[in-house]
Amino acid sequence: MSVKNPSNRTEVSSNQITTKHLFLENRGLWASSISEIDRKLKGRRGLPEYDALTLDGCHGNDCPAVPYRYDFEQFSKREYNRIQKNRADFEDLVYQHQVLAGTPATSVSEIPTGVNVGHGVRAAASQKLFEIGSFQATGNKLDMAITGEMGFFKIQMPDGSFAFSRDGSFKIDSNQQVVTSNGYLLEPPLILPEGAILNTLMISEQGEVTVKVGADIRPIVIGQVELYRFVNPAGLQAIGKNLFQETVASGPEIPGTPGMEGFGNVLQGFLEMSNVKIVEEMVNMIVAQRAYESNSKAIQTSDNMLSTAISLKR
Image (cartoon, rainbow, N blue to C red):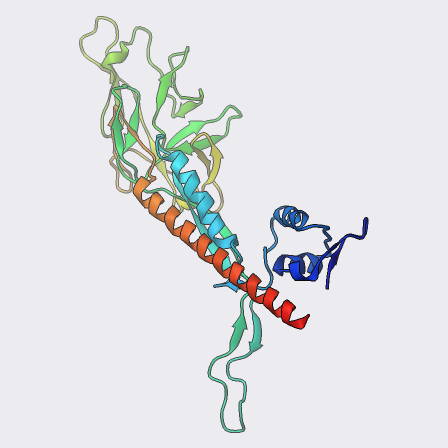
């Protein structure tokens, strides 16, 4: 048995044929050397690496690789304010029912359990986890953190649509309007009056905004910070820049003020940091790495068994 390359007719000797060769031959691929086989396999992403071995419903190392990538992504998020961690959800693929439960075994008995062969699993969803993160004091009068899990700031986008965010890092633009770091307006608009003294700006836990203007000793109320929540925040569509948009799955926005039932309070001078827990992610990464190594060893064992079987046939 050999694996041929139709262009130059070179062959791989039979004692070199492994599971990889069988995989290539089944896929209609050809290779003239072991190194070329490896290169072709690396380029066939999206297919199971080995058809001859299925581990706990996972083809080869496909399953551990997905959470492994997610763990690296979490590490990159841990130092930034209000970036939510992701969770990969998996689902199994269709089963091949070789023996159905309840199949008659004899005239008076039946098989109590069936034989179902799985065809692997796939990543079904990537879910944002809106668990509350830790707070970091900034001293910035315009920074705001939401003290509960329920609540988003409403942001007006350049095209007039609206997005939602828990990133409370706000600035003042040239028009004295409160905007995000990317220049998007806070909704409802919050505008500082002419002559306002920024270091006297105060935002209460209930979202009332006051500031002193000019020589006036008494602060005046200039606006109200509002919050918005959703029945299913996991259904929000992430659009980047710490922003999310409403979808049918999330349900419509529910407006409210800080401190109302179902809404958190506003904490001035603080930012909510990422909810990624570094120790937890390190443990998850080690678990995924060990699973990957275990699958690799099992594949190697299966490869050796097939090689031995082919040698016996010769």
